[in-house]
Every structure is written in structure tokens, then in C-alpha cells.
Image 1 (tube, helix red, strand yellow):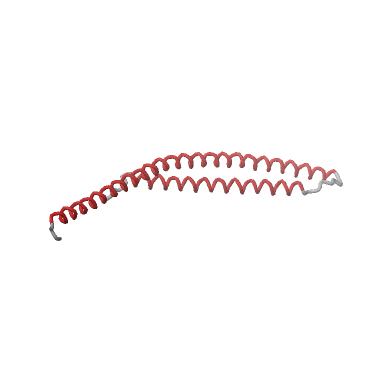
Image 2 (cartoon, rainbow, N blue to C red):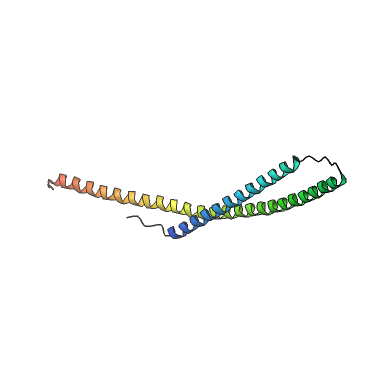
Length: 144
């Protein structure tokens, strides 16, 4: 009978950690995409505004709106910078978790291969023994 892989519990833990890291990476990527979409929409909305000043009050309002828009875009770029840093961090965490899991997966595969070979050898020994016993009985004239 094949022995159980002794590191199976640790392997399962590493796989759960890898799945969590993958989930964190997916969330960070989703936030980055949402922020990029928000930036693009804001820029498109600001670019579509016509700026035809008809009086000095309208000109001041346009200047204030543009200043406010620049400030808002600067904040969105800062959020984008932080979000990209989170994506990079999550990607590194996923790569590290994958590496730890991969090493154990290779050990498990090697264990399964070794145990499979041992099972095949044991089965072959049993078949050889049965065959040898049958040959000796046939030569000696014994009947089973």
C-alpha cells in the first residue's frame, strides 16, 4: 500500500495561500482598471467642455473649473500610483506563494512516482511468486 505524502497538509496550506494571493492580485487589478476608467472618463468629460468666455465672470468660472479639474486629475493620478504599487505588491506576493507551492507540488509528484514504482514492483514480485509456484507444482506433478 502506498504511503501518504507526509507534506500534504503543508502543500494544502501553500495552495490556499496561493489562492488567497491570486484573489488579492485580482482585486488589485480590478481597482486599477476601475481607477483608469474613472480617469479616462474624467479627462473625456473635461475635454468636451467648450470654453467660450462671454464675460469676465465666465472667464473666472472657467479658470476655477480648470484649476479644480487639474486638482482632481492630480488626485486621481496619486490614487493610480498607489493602486499600481498595490498591484505590484500583490503580484510579488502571488509569485512568492506560487514558488513555495510549486516546490511542494514537485515533491508530491516525485513521491507519487516513487510510490507508484514501489507498488508496481510489489505487484510484479507477487506475480513472479505466483508464476514460480505454479511452474514448480506443474513440474512436480502436483495439482492445485
